[in-house]
Image (tube, rainbow, N blue to C red):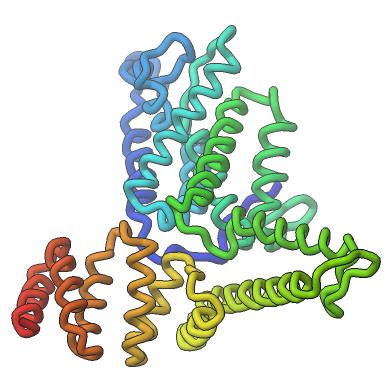
Length: 391
């Protein structure tokens, strides 16, 4: 028996949406059951059957409602446990609204998978397992290198740490759903459809930059692997990266030097980005900020993941490196302008330009934009006073 019970990463913000979904599932579970008069048996109340999914037979809304119903205590306990374990960090990356939408569409995807593959013999389906599988698939894509602490018990009990990538694919997808098909009354096809949706959609969100990529997600790992493959192909063709020559093949010297310089530059960029991520994970923000400035000197077009860039900009501001902080905040707004707290970044940037960099025009522009978006009366008044002072 293998059961993950802890991850080595924590969400940066409280995952209220995930907690709300868990709470709603628990609340509905408490009112699902009643005691049949005369028999004393505990069973579903009559209204429950109107919300259970019966593929090809039930109304469209049951493709969502079935995911909030559970058969018994153990059914909801395991579903909510895995939702708590994996959903918190996914909620943090997708935001509250995005996470709720992702969860609901994951439930629908699981229901559709069950309906398509069991159209000839539809059976009642209920439970959050498909939606939880979608969230777990998303976690696999976003945090494949995170470590899961696994408790195991066979002849003895112990714990081990396993990368999420291997445990989720090999244990939860292959072993628990593909190889275990046909055992018990479990909707394996709904689970697999949920995993497919969660993995596929999250990869698409990263590829299209709707969700910011990090140096450690599955898409970044794929790009790193492709760069390494390309490098191996170049070396295999006869190019020596240490000497800068290609035996038995005529190559213009400028082309060789350019290729060598580009490879060295790319390797240096990758090393610095990796070190920045490590320093931030260690909460050594001053060192991360120094590395960021080094990265900008090498290639100013490099953009860090959203939270990394914001942490570094804040650190530069707290270190009174105002010009560097302003540049980092400007890069943040250019790349992540739809961030839910962009108004705070606009405010901070406006104050930097106004009070420390003596750039009244830029300060006024950012303060005006911040005033339009802010909801805190004190901050709005601060913007108004600062704008008046600048004019």
